[in-house]
Length: 212
Image (cartoon, rainbow, N blue to C red; front, side, top):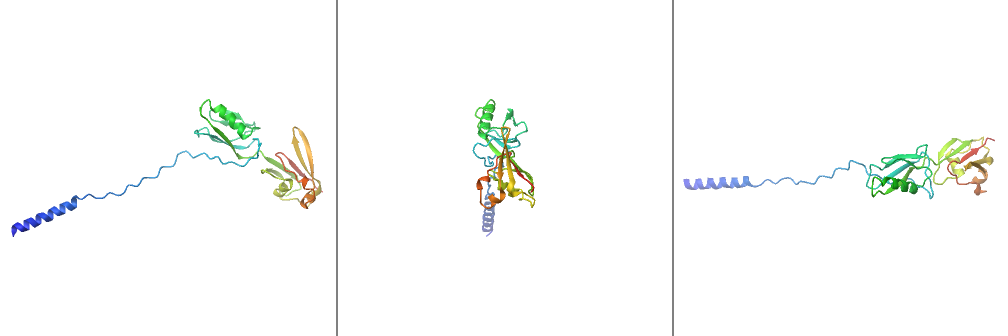
């Protein structure tokens, strides 16, 4: 009997040992998400520019150099028409199209970056301004949209005042040092007559609304 008890005890002990010896399952190691890049990506979004658009003073440009974000960035055209970039310093921008400026920067930067590829986008067209003075609610300078007529500018300026001489409005345009004057009869245009007077405005145009 004693032999049987010892054998049973031994079997129970061995079974417990086997149970304890079984490996403990470890938690599943899930891959950690990659850390975000320390340097933000450069975007190429810009404002629409019509064909032949030339860069002017105070315009904000995005300079994008492929595979080199140190040189890429946004710059503002200075009053002297220049912009400043790393490596190549001052570059003339005013009077050039975005493509012409990109070519000029690309040529200059290839001295330092052999396979440089440059793109120029227009972030803000601050040089495209028109002016309205006289009998309107809010005279002053306004950002010229891609397309804006005389009557649209008057609307943006809050409309004519009660003292405006609506039939004798004029548009002044300076080109090559010479001033051209275009007549604008608000009442006729508003009534659908003589729509040709409602011309498309250009940067630098001034609309004069006289007092009656």
